[in-house]
Amino acid sequence: MNAAATKLNPALPEREITSFAIDSRDVKAGDVFFALSQPDYKNNGFNGDFDDATPFVPSAFEKGATACVVRRDRFEEHSEILRDFEDRLIFTDDTIKALQDMAHGIYLEWNKPVVAITGSAGKTTAKELTAHVLQSSGKKVLRNIKNYNNGLGHPLTVLNLAADSSYDVAVLEMGMSTPMNEIQRLCRITPPDVAVELNVLPVHVEHLGSIENVAKAKAELVEGMKSGGVAVLNADDPRVLAMSELTKGETITYGIDSPADVRATDIVFENFGNTHFQLHTPNGSAEVAFPLNGRHNMLNALAAAAVGHSFGMTTKEIASSLATVEPPPQRGEILRFGKGFTVINDSYNSNPAALISMVQTLVDGATSAKRKIVVAGEMLELGDNAHAIHRQTGETIAAMGIDMLIGVRGLAEDIVHGAETQKFSNAKFATDSDVAGDMLAAEIREGDVVLVKGSRGVRTEKVIERLLKEFELEDKAL
Image (cartoon, rainbow, N blue to C red; front, side):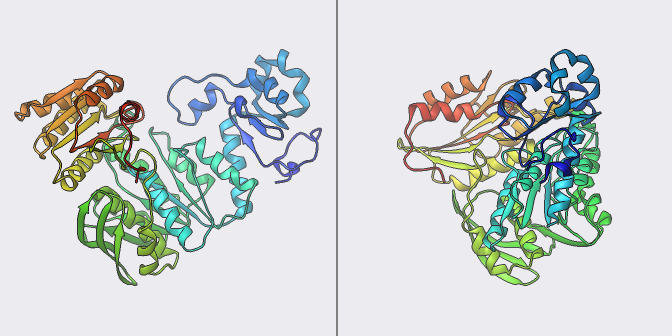
């Protein structure tokens, strides 16, 4: 990208600008640094209090930044330390919007297909599966790293195209957690050619008020897709299927239980990392040996298959690709330990439906286990009914055939109490993940199969770290 195209101050040197930063500690020579501040975060739907990055502009220039983007009002406030750099500053009224506008400009120059994925659960796994399927057809795929799915991570991902425009397609997850039209804003940056809707679940209701409002927020993806594009909709979720009325082009449905364009039948769950099913698309059928577990991952695979179909892949090509996928870190990783026990690491995120689905995966796949143990973290952003939802989840888990339950932190105590109301006697509560790790390490033995399920905020990955500190793996995580 040429510097002149960014409307930088004419006093700036003419040069190629291909990298951008929002953290002064990450600035490298040649970067454009965006100095974010609290008003920007508030205007763009971010919850919480954030540091003002404007005072770090001088250090960004010391590290070699080409230019810095700052709010006009923040410049006046910090003019004493910024005046010497004024000819290299780009002034704006909203630095996050400026970042997003620049990303949109880069997207317009690139002008290739965007696959956008949203849902209350499974976005990252579905994104990885979809990118894997499209890569197997020979395409070079841009995708967000980690959980870069919000108003900052999304444009930063798109700005990678400034340095390398050779990508054939972008597969981007889009997240939201507030009623401030976050997905609508992301669609303005990169209008989707293919809009994938995974599910609508009662998460973020603390901020959105109801599951109906969650559905409306998720529907912004379909509303924001290009005319003539493709909406890929989960037919097993009625709220998602209802979004077909909003589509501006073709609709491809997928599902397990409901009639759909892309379906899985004859599902055989042999053991962890070994699921077989028949994949059906409008172009025919093929058998899939799928190395991930659980109904939720089956649906993620079908979503990826539907996208592959929309790009002209054959059913056999899609099936071959799905056979070689790997779970993203902390999302269903299977860890086999030398002491003879197995742990399923699903520590990235949690909600009631996802937790129950993973417990069912544990029960179905650990038929020969001596004990089936669930470590369940507190579930976040469930709103006013959070206590009741945790208790109901505990009641459900207690009836599913497990042998031990450890609830981790805060409201997870209600999971334990819910299990106890069902006469489940082996339920324990740990005040945090460190305590849970110690508790499990002292208890675990040969023949056990353990599910560790939690959210990043609860940091249940510490339970895994505790086990890895004391016990050696038998082989690499699958």
